[in-house]
Image 1 (cartoon, rainbow, N blue to C red):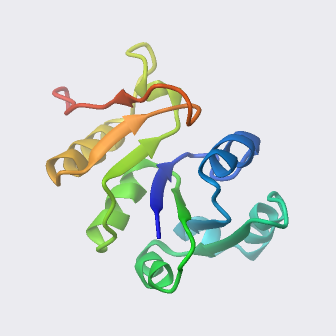
Image 2 (image 1 turned 180 degrees about the vertical axis):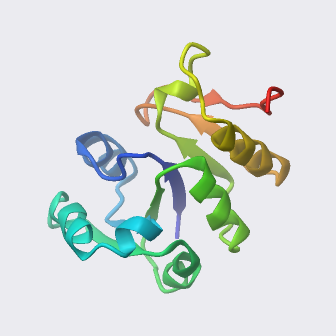
Length: 149
């Protein structure tokens, strides 16, 4: 099983389906988000946004590792922010890299919240690469330790 962890505040949207899922041929999406997992309406909204060939599950962050253990197919693991990505890593989910979707990580012009920077720094100190990338075929912007937090 191949696992890609992507942090994107929008979770599921057209670019994710039309670019990322097709590029990597993902047929399984796991959304690890406590807020969405506790909201039946939003869970159903997210599930309705994907084509039938993609299976979507929503779970709380602390349930994600157990869910992943039962999958045989490649999985795109989605979380909203680097803070949640760090929580997933701390829960025992092993990934080589966390992919950040937001353009704010590619430019020094948009302010990044301090808690996001701190989470990215801790992910990096755990030996996990962090990159920012809008489309899968684009060059990755590798993120380094933020010194200003």
